[in-house]
Image (tube, rainbow, N blue to C red; front, top):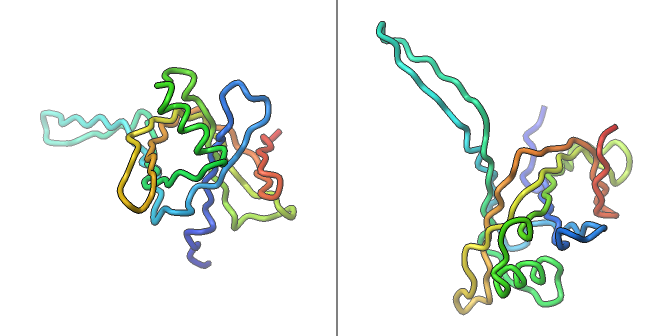
Length: 161
């Protein structure tokens, strides 16, 4: 048994437009010191008349923050985020998929265990300080998760059969 290095849990976002046939997965993390998926558990606690507390977790509302995100011209993610900002996109125009890849699970060359999930992009702000143009954003996952494999060489998700 060994501790897993943080770099071995990879996070990808599909930067292609929702109507695109082919996803354009981009790995998150180049300028991030941390990326945490907050599970957002829906917790219901009740105390009965004899002093006991019962706890029920009925679901999750996971989300994650990507901050900072430094804009880089010509990249698919910058193009997507800029369009959200400039056109003030809403609703399904913000839909994408994210993939969490467990890079410690290689069993077929470049394919690793992974989970793909539908998410919505919420741009928090744009501009930034003198270090560069920043477009921090949040990801709100919908709970529509699919287990499969992710080919890091091809940047493709293969759903489990």
